Image (cartoon, rainbow, N blue to C red):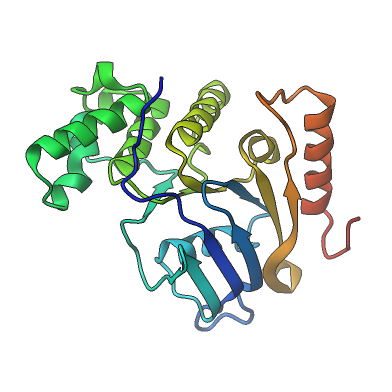
Length: 266
């Protein structure tokens, strides 16, 4: 299902330079020295043990947290707060239960006071992009968890962001629904071309989705700040088979990096 140009903004590159965050009263920075260049239209996953700072980095890119060191640039511009160029999807769907699927998706464009016909067209396009046209008149409580997460993604797409930021969006789904959503997200990314940063605890999910995987380490449990240990290219062509030797080799390498503690991994 080709969806055409979902975005108003073109995909944006993201630059993190020596990024750090030290929360008041904390003995150590949550993250320090994080440097990552994300290309326009790239799909990057961020993995690491709990407490390594991966969600903190995502929230700084979103503009929900301010950096205490370094810089965050989106399309060459400093991030100073949340903006319509960056759409965020969390594990909690955050849908309005009193609104239908169509009304939830239309909420952002309506808040932007766009013409009614424009809102309707943009909403229909985003709903179709996630395959929910048939249930556009339903309410969230009438939908499965996977379908509700599709609504959350469509609501972000309707705002036509340049960057899609996702923090464990499939973590609460059952295994089969999660697999379906991963497949759908790969299609949505391919069709929309938006830049994606996706935080996950699942290494298999990261290898299935990403062009590159950022492996973070550290955190207060390890006595140092969260930091980037390594960035791994996922050099797999076409449809990805999690049972293939090539897929498993990359998964094992990332698993070793995640579980290496403070030791260097070749």
